[in-house]
Amino acid sequence: MLKIIERILPSWALCTEPDPLHSHARRYTAKYRRKQGVVKNLWIGIGVVMIALPNLSLIAALSLLTTFVSFIILDETD
Image (tube, rainbow, N blue to C red; front, side, top):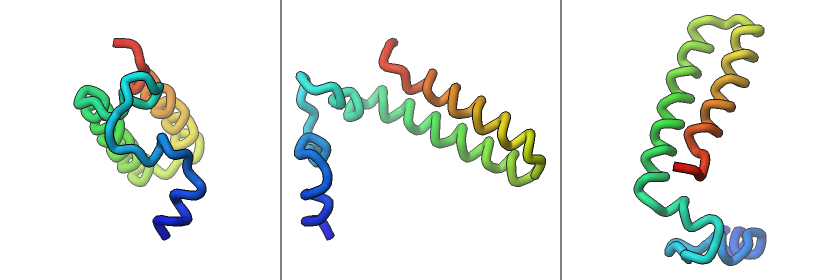
């Protein structure tokens, strides 16, 4: 299975050590990992609200809003 993944993904995506010259290096920083944790907890919380209140219009609005907020949190700027 790992061989198939190695063929599909580019070599830089399989790297576990950040290359300071590459655009994805920020994903390995502690600050970015904390941001990912915040986004994960946000989605879990919103998911619970969506399950508790199964209204299609509310689910659509919350999904769009949460996606927007997730992008704001994970933005590259500090």
